[in-house]
Length: 458
Image (cartoon, rainbow, N blue to C red; front, top):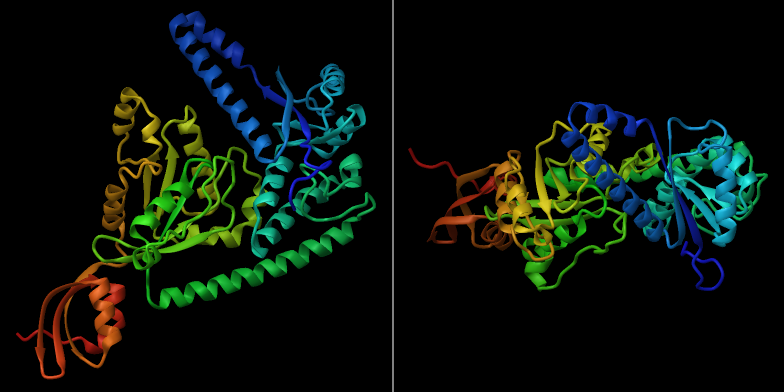
């Protein structure tokens, strides 16, 4: 459902960033031992905090809101009633009123009690980080499958919070954090939502069975799948388009580029995309572009998008695309690996791809080049793509390159054309109506024409 408030006016959002713990005290303890180390740690902490703030703002912008202001708070622990404490709530109420904010967004998850208390005390709607991410997913879901998955995640999030949804439940479908299920009244009860959840799970299970059947048909003629994974906005879609434009089957046949949406907005690509690719060895693979991950990705999304993420689970090789220019590169890597762990795919072969090297300084590029095993690319400029494809070719073991002798009647034009297109013809000679060929190609391709295979004379 497209974002809309009053005409084309965007909602004004007041952002609340809350950090817990005693980071300052920890730095002071280090400073007592080594002032220089403490200053470095403090600088790194500040850089980390700034990057988190920018990510939060980008999430809000991706949801279609205008940032009316931002307030940061550091406290030892969360207040169980309001998260931020009664004094801070009074300050938020005054700031929200003066900024004419339509909603307050917390970069933290809120319990049902916290949500209810904050909405009672503040002059506008309140949503948390999970609701914000779910709303962005609702904006970008284009296929029926994607819409079902988002709705399921939203309802599962809403179910335990029904008692705390005063203002938002009365205006569902009218702003950030309210898109998706389409319920319009506060009296929506648990039984109704539970029935809808069961229905959605049933429909998604049917989707999963359909995908499994499609996958079985593909696996009947085994073509390995390579899946792009990574933090949101790392450039996966740009890399997918760069690869398919150069090596994709449709691009080579028609000269047209059939890619996916490239956008600086987070989660611009939600629905999975598969494209046939031919490697230098003439081996064919399927390249899969998947949804990006993010810090504190709601578990309900991982569960709801299980059918979509099956492509990751079934892939032979994962390409972990990382933003080489991000100051939070290692943290983003850890977050991606956390989700991959939830999917039980950490043991799969994984190639680390450092993208966006075109924006690095010479010193930064040299440091990135020292990353063990990483492939440096610029999807935007197209540099490093050939080296990446060579690494993929070397990594694939399921579809080895074999050399075999074939004897094919000339009337079998489809078989001759397929071997010509997908394999290397080492030798060829004609004998009457037969074509004798020594062919080097992927086992999956040669296996299709095993009936024409001829044993070499001893």
